[in-house]
Length: 298
Image 1 (cartoon, rainbow, N blue to C red):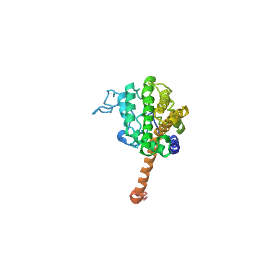
Image 2: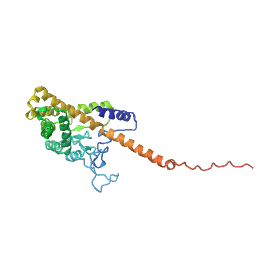
Image 3: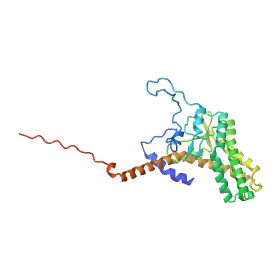
């Protein structure tokens, strides 16, 4: 969390000070523009049919993307080409998801390779710290920690991003702000775990996320060691997942700024190196034409 704030704060402040930088509600640079252009999400929700010109000659209205088409674009989003960010949208006017689409998004998220890789890291750290010591060490202990960590992730997402959002008509996605002062965006991202958009377009408390995390923590008492099944431990696990979600939202919010900053720095470095290798070609003096002579008087 501290690393994200350290990297993002100067970037956000420098962007706010620049009068030439404009960022719409769909934050630019987009998440995928920062990583891989082939997966970038269009800033507009319209599709131009093949062969149709966008010039003034075309008078037919271009149909907007459907909710299903918007969802398919979201399911291609990643940070660094690895970290899946399917539950993120850059369009504050995104169409609401149907219950079927919410379950589809949940299933896509929990079956992607990314959570399995992340779970492997979490289980390894847990084993190194000897958390849940009753699991023991060795491969058997690691397997138990891995299974527990992934089951936590699965159940939390199942209730927090599919079941409860469908019942409560809440949108399980994180809406990137993408503009404004650093502190405003940081608070927006942190507050997303407790505040969300609803299917009717209004905003309100994120009951599904908070309750889903607590339900997942309660279910985890089935497979966690007996000494870890106290009420305080259960609440701590549920709240920890909620805080982790806020940290993830901070990374997603500021990643386009971080990636854009370092891409710009890299391009500037290449330009300096090219200028050093070819100092004569870097700046050729512009030949000046001779000044016209004054007319002679007779």
